Amino acid sequence: MAMTAKSNKSSTSLTVPNLFLFFTLLSLFSLFIFLFFPTATTLHSSPSPHASTTINVYVADLPRSLNYDLLHRYWTSFSDSRLSTDEDHRHPPSLHPVAKYLPYPDNPLIKQYSAEYWIMGDLMTPPQHRVTSFANRVLDPRLADVVFVPFFATLSAEMQLGANKGAFRKKTGNEDYKRQREVMDAVRSTEAWNRSGGRDHVFVLTDPVAMWHVKDEIAPAILLVVDFGGWYRLDSRGSNSFESGVVPHTQVSVIKDVIVPYTHLLPRLDLSQNKERHQLLYFKGAKHRHRGGMIREKLWDLMIDEPGVIMEEGFPNATGRDQSIKGMRTSEFCLHPAGDTPTSCRLFDAIQSLCIPVIVSDNIELPFEGMVDYSEFSVFVATSDALKPNWLVNHLKSFSKEQKATFRQNMARVQPIFVYDNGHPGGIGPVPLDGAVNHIWKKVHQKLPMIKETIIRERRKPPGVSVPRRCHCT
Image (cartoon, rainbow, N blue to C red; front, side, top):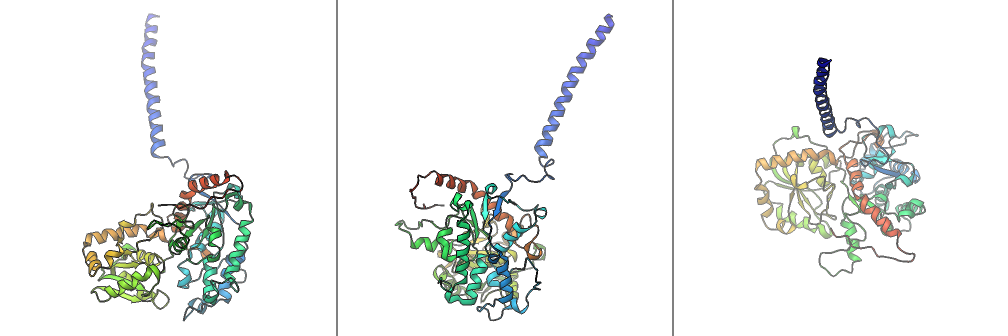
């Protein structure tokens, strides 16, 4: 008995520490799995409608005449008077009578603004094919973070400009104005608009003149624009500010609005296909511009005779496209001066061509800043420096071969971010995970806390109290 008791005591003294050590190691192992493989249990799960990694989007109820039927009208009955040769209608797509989704125009004057088409295509894609999209479409506006307004505003404006430019700024005889009015009458009559004052509604206005006649009405909304150039001029005219350099932004602001890329018109050049570049600097575009674009004419006169600098008049349309491809792919740097507005599709053609952008545009706003650091692949030059004789050429020559190679490597990494095309007919299909559409939705998502705060603040105002829109300083 004594020996048995002694044996049991010895067994117990060995077992308890071993069990304690076993469970300690098991806990540490579980913690390691949790910390370092957090997605293991979520990779195959469907995102919750309220997951923080998506934005819930409701599509406002508008007739097809304001989007896809308008596109059908473009292909069947529109001719652009601004073009000497209308390639779209010389070689139109096959127009099947029951085709639901036609391609966006290839006309470069319109194609550069095609964001509306690709964003709409993402939302129209069946749910089972939208697994790569950051936007989660909901069918109840009360569950939505934002309300998307499905109006092809740019296509509408450009069709009016191409048919009868003289009527564009008038309301009488202006088909585009009729469509703008139809959109606003429809959305402003909804409970969703009245609940937020339109502040959570998303409009795609890539063309600077899109929805021109109703800009005051849509000013509270989230505007997807290529830059703030034209909008700032509207604010400047109505400004009573006496402080130099300060404009009260009652129309647009980086706090609520999103800068989106132009659609590039030139094909992508892969880094592995890049060849030696023999020219220093390339520019192709219109020499004469208005307002802030007058810098372009001065630069042209200053640099036209500089060795290694090519300045060409024109646009990358059907006749100038090959010339633009060659110029951008054989030059180290591509000049991006301000035009009628601070930016243009030329910047995004340069990125796709791996031609280091030289940005001479003091008031430029760029897409996806905070996600993309443009200084890693672009050269920013103050207008005052660029206009000094020989300054710009000498500055560009000062970059070493290694620095230019690094710029180009960094550029190659961000090329996909500025691509809209998902490669599917009619734009209906999964969007690229790292493409422009998803980055736009992520940017809108970043604005939500401030937008929601503004909506709540507006609701608590007593009836009859009106507070003017304030300057959003950035």
